[in-house]
Length: 263
Image (cartoon, rainbow, N blue to C red):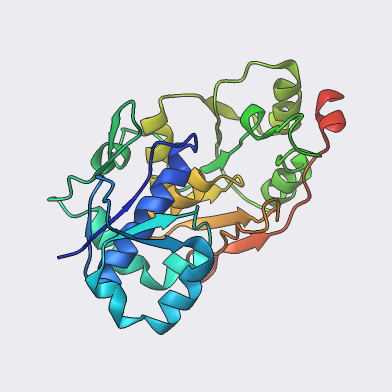
């Protein structure tokens, strides 16, 4: 039986690696491959740009070769039509898959552990990415939406508590950004990585950030979820949009570095 894998030793973060893992599982679902964390020598390198055609045409020869995927594969159109099958594969009690970053083994089952939570269906969770999406000075502007993206959604909702999920806030400009939401008396959640993943999966109402991790965890939710998903069009190759019917997709602009520093 042929294998499928990806190279997890690069500098990309966990959300990116998880979507690469889902790509491998999708290939296994369609072509019969077994996922492995081991990098095979004799492989067919499947480029990200070819994947849409491969999903459409399903060439028979791929069922007989080892595959290593190359790219980030951050397009919802790849995964949403196969979501039910992918959820079954990820949540299989016998699933002991992991990837090797070169420094540690990341087991899938550890990333989908449910943490205790007091959040109810009357509450709203909001994912925010700040300092790590600043991208200064490497790009011309940040990948951080204007606060109005979040505020416009919140103003149209009836809810009890607002929970903000974010990394540890350190910079003054980050606090100034979050201060736009003080009127809702938000509860700031800066827990462990696993707790953040659990919250984004299990909350019933989620305002996404433009984060691959947020989208993947929302994709892995089981049961009904009310979603608000931004597509900032920051990376031409990235298009992570609706997961289920009824999801609301928005197209916010992102802030200039000078605007963030001037908050």
